[in-house]
Length: 129
Image (cartoon, rainbow, N blue to C red; front, side, top):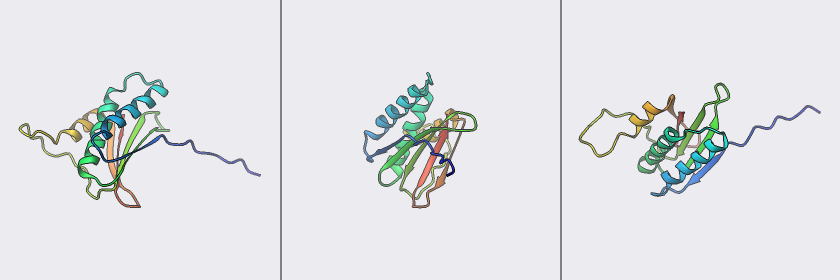
C-alpha cells in the first residue's frame, strides 16, 4: 500500500458579520503569529482588520479568515472570504474622506495582495505579510 500524504489543516476562523469581527480576526492572527514565533504581528493585525472591515461593509454573509505559511518563502498569508460579488479596488486618495483608506494601507503593508472569485460564489482577498 502506498503511503498517504496528509495536508496540514489551515487555521480558520468563521465570523458573524458584526462590529466585533475585526477585533476577533486581529486576535486570531496574533495567536497564530505567536505560535509561529513571529514576534512582530503589527502589520498583519492592521491588514486583517482592514480586510475584515471591507468584508463587513461591502461583502455578504459570514466572514472566513484563514492564515497559513507560504511553502515557497515561509511568509504568512492572510485570506478573508465573504459572499459578496464586488471586488475590492484601491480608490484614488481623498484626503477629505473619513474612510476608504483600508486598501491603501494593505497595499503598503503587505508584500503582495490580491483577490480571486470563489467557485461557490463570493470572493477571497489575500495578503502576504
